[in-house]
Amino acid sequence: LPQQRRPGEHDARAGTMADLCHLLSTQHRFAEAQLTCLQSLSLAKEAHCPDSVCVSQQYLGLLLEMQGDLGGAERELRIAAETASIEDVRPQRLCNVFQNFCIFLWRRGRLAEAEAACERCKATGFGMGIDDLLQQIRATKPSVAAPSSAAVTLRGREDAPSKLPSPRGGAARGRKARARNAGHLEL
Image (cartoon, rainbow, N blue to C red; front, side, top):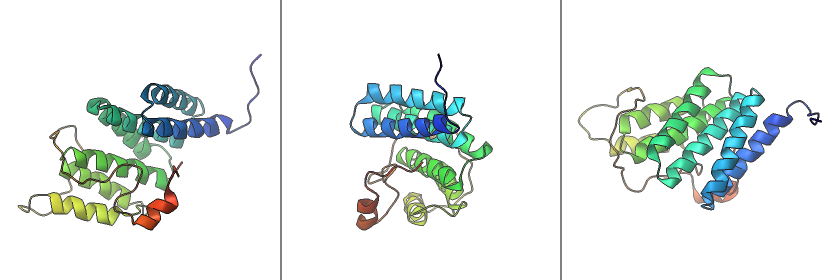
């Protein structure tokens, strides 16, 4: 017989599994992480919870990036960004998705798209360190023209500038903030 579930239980399980997916990814346990991400995504969709769908999709994208599947990573991060844009997600979630997408694009040298993604995060008012990240991106751009309001597209180079921040750690946060937030994954 199927178990009775309390309201919101699918969503809570999906979020916990998404966190586990990210943890396993950082431990380079990729096969387990991918399975956990996919289970999390399935639960989030069953629960009709856009926040959990976004976090699951985002972590799947970050996992694929760690594995070197840049096309798959971009696809998953873009789906997370699109979901965050059209669904009713918390502003913090939208900002987090776009900040991680920004960092992904920046690493590939796609500066105009990265800047647009960061601006999307900044517009929510929740972008911790987003101004510093934008400043770094703009400093990396060739000084031929003023910052553009380019839309995020699928075209771009695959090379990346050096010394880029890593997703989840927040861009240009101080050591105290990183220490304080160590191990914390936002849901």
